[in-house]
Image (cartoon, rainbow, N blue to C red; front, side):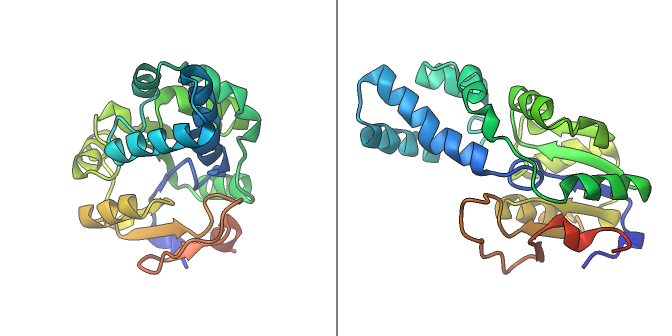
Length: 218
């Protein structure tokens, strides 16, 4: 599936790619609505409905990914709420051996995430994956999410990567489309970002069930 001899740089998404998206889905769709309902004296259903509309308005923007924005917007301590369910943070199977092998193969390994730096810090503290990366980059540094062309321009200024020799693995189809439009030649999607949800349809991109499928030399 991957011609590793053609790859110099590996860009890896975090949530839904390396980590189980169940944590984030539970947090935004259940935990936050429950706490917001308590604060506002709403039913859980009314809270979920209101928040769903708010989420949709900023989907795909930096605001959606910003913990500080949501703390202000909802009057909740989002950082504290994330800690409350941090026991759900989990690494997908075979991720650690995959990271070990691509580093051993001499690839530059970079985490590229839309997640807020506070969320990144929490997840690294729980998973201890940070030492596998040559760099960890949050889209907040560039002021544009990965869905936007300006993100890749900003990343190019930091990483000076050759798009033809770069692999991006990401669970977001809009992000993969954006990377494709920028010229990144090697793209892989994830079939099941959230282990508690059904397999996704990702027909427009090659995709993996597990990192075990793409081990260098495997």
